[in-house]
Image (cartoon, rainbow, N blue to C red; front, side, top):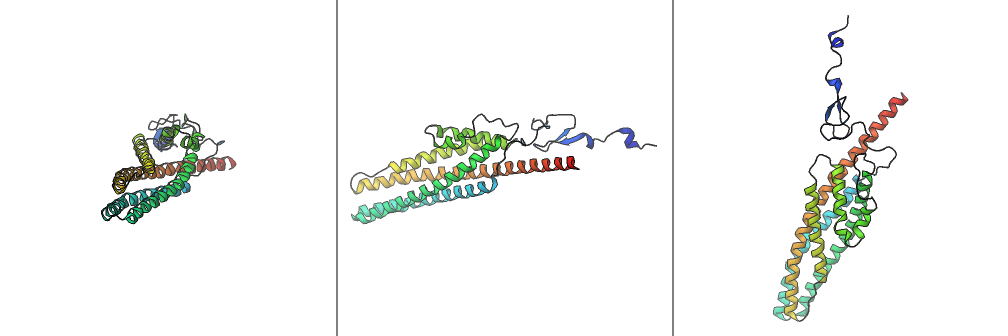
Length: 269
């Protein structure tokens, strides 16, 4: 005689399946997830397109960005030292002290320049991989081609807009269900302020005697403090974005490969 469970049909648990995209529970007869709105029947990653590893490169890029932020803090702190040396040199009519202040300032600018160059190369390499992964995500449909993930940083005027737009698409497609728009916006705004003030520092030059040199270091201190705050804020937000996006994309790629292996094992079995 059939049991009660047989007469009642499949249990409620058997009628619920988890969405492969967000892991939310859904009725088995529903093709679209009620939580994320994606098609549950589509693969996590198109099997015919490559998916790139981003976690290790992201860690290295985030570390380089952290070094840049630390140097910005040091530069902001030492701007007071440079101003003190310049004022002391003016009071004592000692050009050697003013020259020492200039060497300190130039050394910091060189160190920041080298650190930003290294960090920039690493961030762009990570940025390009993270963008190319969107092509393998069925629902992503990015509106800007992957080539601009590198070119957007290098083309004049385009570099004021394109990296922000591409990062916004990367974050939205990788971190579905999370509020990423403000995070990307604050990062890009802080980055632009830091970049423009850093360029301004390189163009400031003293003209005249001791009073002009003292005035120069007064302006340098003000600009360096603004640049330090902006670069630290941009660095912290960028590290946050790199960590979140790298983790989400790595997890998605791993789940897609695991599901593919399981499907292959079932077919082979």
